[in-house]
Amino acid sequence: MKKRVKHVELTLALLAVQLVLGQGASVGQRGQREPVDAYGNALLAVGPLLILARRRWPIAATAGTAAATALYLLGGYAYGPPFISMALMLGWLVIDGRRWAAWAMAAVMLAFFEVYAWLAGNQSWFHVVAISTFMALLMVAAELVRIVRERRATTARAEEEEHRRQASEERLTMARELHDVLAHNISLIHVQAATALHLIDDQPEQARTALATIKAASKEVLGEMRSVLNVLRDGAPRTPTAGLGHLDDLVARSGLNVVLKRLGTRPLPPQVERAAYRIVQESLTNVARHAPDASVVARLEYREDELMIRVTDTGSSTPGVLAELGGGNGIPGMRERATALGGVLSAGPHGSGFQVTARLPLPEERS
Image (cartoon, rainbow, N blue to C red; front, side, top):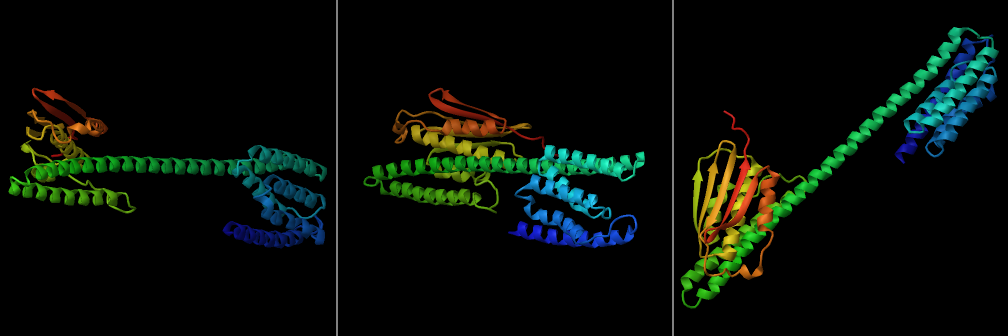
């Protein structure tokens, strides 16, 4: 609707300009050209009125404007006014991508102008060159506008595609975050619930401790899920849902015999800190699933160019309550996190237990 209104406004404006210029040119060229009469004014109105049909029939509208221009000149009327609508129509035809039709019509009109000028007695080379130069400049200008518009459209499409790719990566990251949050906390809740059921009759105080752990874990999973889901909402801050500053809480909630060792310290990029936390979390989840009675050493070593994470457990002769559920996506997920940051992760048997080692590259520390 807005485009239609703009076309009507442009038609009325151009119609007024051509009719007024037609009268002015007729006065200025009195004695040399015929005065503009009703037929001449009708021909001057053709080009502006065909703007309304240009979007639906662009080639026909341009051809009609060119024909009205030719008839205007053949009628002997003053030079000038009809050239405006003809130039606009040819330029629009090029910009809209119908280049061959535009160049063909421009060539036909140029030939007509040259022949008409020769028949009218303007046989100088200057006149020939002037007409040819005007037509060439008009078409080249239209081509330049077309090229600029196409480049802008290409850039806009590339930016939109990049935006979609980033959004897809964010969703994948959030899905991984959600998986890690649920896998760890639900596994912890399951283990502690089994412990509570086992001890509730003989050792109620220890069962109470297990239930308290379940309460804390459920509260934690709800909080982290809310944080992860908030990231998916428009305008939500893109911040890590967990970091290494929460490792002590993670170890305390795990219900495992864990020794946490930190060698050195330095600021870490958010993505590295989040990945490191999730790797430790998933490693402890696997211990809780398969060897809940094992002793665990979680070691973080802050090196100059990398963060080394090593989680080692001693193994257990008693299968975990979740071991019968089989393997999941824990180790592949940890490896994907490390690889995404340019690091490496290995996981496998270590003595009677299991060991996960990850090396995450770090940027050079600024002095």
